[in-house]
Length: 119
Image (tube, rainbow, N blue to C red; front, side):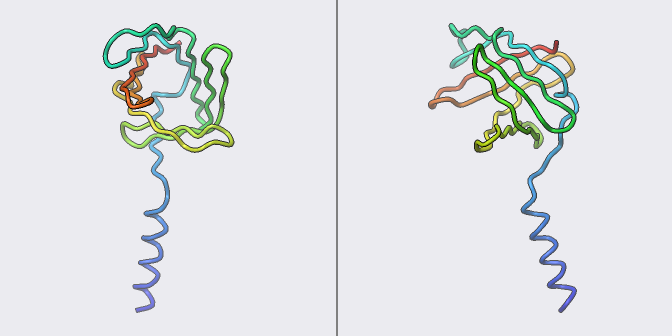
């Protein structure tokens, strides 16, 4: 009985921890290349978007004059970022390899895809 309670407590504790694959392919600097809205080219200048994912789990991002930094983690094809002082957000990674990265986002109910290349 005592061991059953310990096992249940351990399983509950590990189930509550957030998964972090910390995909090593993301580590480095990324530059925006194209921004699609509902699968069509947009007027947004994707080249103004930059991300840097560091091995220690921190990241920084910029879009024009807007800057943010915080922590990141991955869980399979999902990338989670938590800007310092804000809530965690998630984007789906459609492509992630040594040279290309594609995020699928849902902003205001419309599908957006941001394509980036590694610097």
